[in-house]
Amino acid sequence: MSDQAQPSFNIQRIYLKDLSVELPNAPQIFLEQGNPNVDVQLNLNAENVSDSGVYEVTVSATVTTKVNDKVLFLVEAKQAGLFEIRNVPEDQLQPIIAIACPQIVYPYLRATVADAINRTGFPPVHLTEVNFQAMYQAQVEQAQAAQGGAVGHA
Image: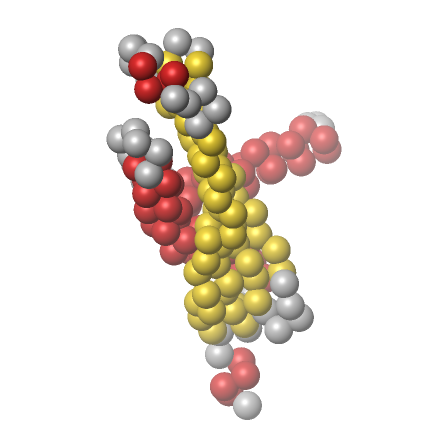
């Protein structure tokens, strides 16, 4: 009976869920001169995919690089992981899903994005490290502020 009560965390699978690479202005874009402007957007999504405590956590990146307002390349990648999380108290579940799981998936996303960009003929863009704990804490504080604002202060 004690086995059932023990918290467990297992990685079932890490996988590339989606990858898109576009060079809409090729081949002329290879002749453009100037400093590239790189815009990186990150997104995190999690969902419960089974009643047995299996969660899919997806970290997405959209990398748009332009020179002189012309797109050099656009890379969109979604890296995902399936995680089995059982017998974890509810107050600890969300931090595991929002911090621990993305920290495991993110290095795979970084490698995928760098490799995809390298294959375009441009130098790879290496995504910076992300502090998922700080991101989670900021979301919690933002949610608490929104709740406090909705309730009002006496």
